[in-house]
Image 1 (tube, rainbow, N blue to C red):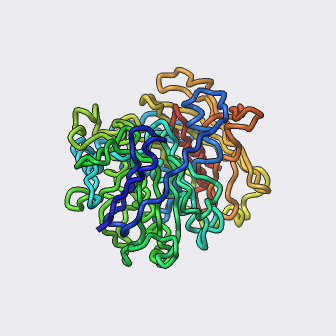
Image 2 (cartoon, rainbow, N blue to C red):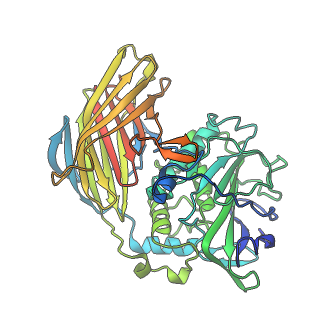
Image 3 (cartoon, one colour):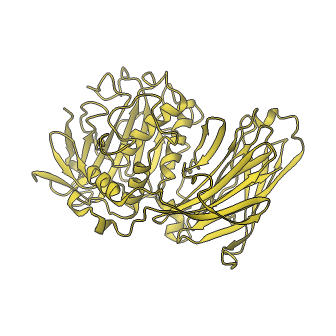
Length: 506
């Protein structure tokens, strides 16, 4: 059985708490406790409101952006939360797109969320009994760092890119300010480096010296999470409000070598959920969950995460503090929880099919998405595209308070260097009032060898005394060119105050 060890040397440095290292019973084998983590503090002066600094400017990290997934003959950007066709009420037309809105009973039930979180707060880590949600606290930004190795020479290798996809999938279920950041720098294999609020991701075969001893030969991967606990001598250890300290994930690349990208990403999502504090496996008889203990390749949901896992992430990281005990998790302490989502949607005929984009809003979380027919070739290989090309259409968005936003969207791309500009304009609340100053603009860079685009400029700049906002608009942009001949484009925008989706045609 796995063991749990105490890191006693942190008792005085971190106050009257200890870090407990938990090894997952279903994902690996026994492991000894590593040395204490170093507490790293930045001396940079943000020069902006702390919540904006944490949400946007966290030093030397980036947001991987929304996931881009292939669903059959379609490309999909963002969370897989599009409502069924015809489920909404047509409202108006904008930028050539037919807009619709309405409510759909598609959210996870209160009882399922409560049950899921009670399991998460009951850690099955022999020989010790540990209780309490082991999530990361809101006072620190969680950063994933990829560890260098034979399968991760840089952040553009297959497994590094799949890791970014997995982080994007998890982030789509989290409030903007709680999303995981990704470090662009590879970490050394120094086993003594344990940084608070860090998730270290290793791609190593089980035969490697650094892979934890005693690992289950059949395991695809394993994860360990450290916790702050109140009293090491108590019969049952209780996680404090400081929650998780740091995590490590080990994936055996040889074990997942035959897997498709989607199958391998699903394994990564499973282990990263553990690393985010959900150490217990779920019961397949009670939930269709990414945290079920067994996995058969090809059986993963097309979104690579189940609805109950998304809802559990949202509730754990927005409704409960770290350390919440199973008995403290109930429908009453969860607070108002809607089992119905509000949707705004746009559908646009691009002449070679339909593209759709929209936002689902439930329980305080707006989730943008966009989808359409996949191109037949890469952007660079399309002879019909030359010089400057423009796509125009519409935008729909939802604020964090659930208010609908409508606007226009335009993307212009230089097919020589695949740099361009995304302009979102005439943005108004559905009531007609102007949203903020009414427009947003972002430099974008397209992947010429593929069919995606992302933001190219930054929200911050380095100055002598720290970091300052650059003056560029805030937000994370991810999109794709759609249609057999790139007749359309669509994507998502995420900010601290707005989540939106947009689409346009050439």
